[in-house]
Length: 268
Image (cartoon, rainbow, N blue to C red; front, side, top):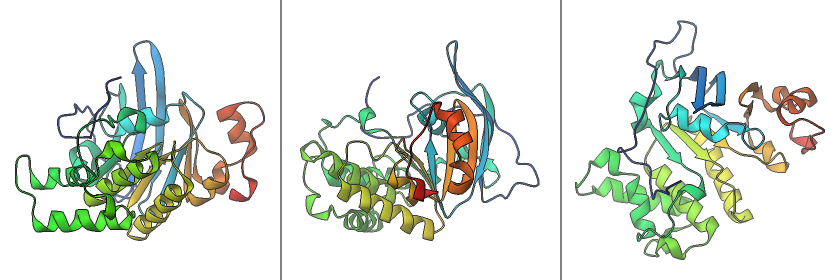
């Protein structure tokens, strides 16, 4: 797969447009019957759930369960064969100016010749416009975002010169600079240090207090799971969604992972 330095307006998007049902809370993010197929392989099958802003939501499941596929299909980065994704009662793909997306590290070209400051300012491109001069507001927001993740002193450093944890913090700052309402992170904790993970969870919690909606793809059923308010458990179809206590049952884990699953029991 070809790597990309950033998520921009040139990415093709697909959706099925529909109206929200009257009973759905319009501030929620609602996914209904979302299915994705790669050639003859069914990657997601009729996944439906609803999540609220102000919650930190973890998307869990075994390898190949469709976690990353779900995020990409929701954002229109890959085509779905059925279903709809609504935010505030309207198709999410019509509101991507409200979305900040951080892909997996493996999908980012870390040799791309840009500085930390350049990467964070990319988060302001959608609001500023292509080939337009960045405003003083955009520069102030970028500075504040770097300060928030403890990376302001590296602003002139090449992104390729940073550690994995530092690089991830820069992309978190880029997401913050977008001033989005919906944040989507795909495996953000892979290959990072404990300090960066703590900073990221602190920022995620701050965002939930600001009533943002945070979706995080994760694979770790260890102690870090206690940070999440709600969980979505997948294995190509939806196994369970809801609070940690509702989702982390032995029956649900057996259905998702098979065999005996060991997880941090106090997290439930």
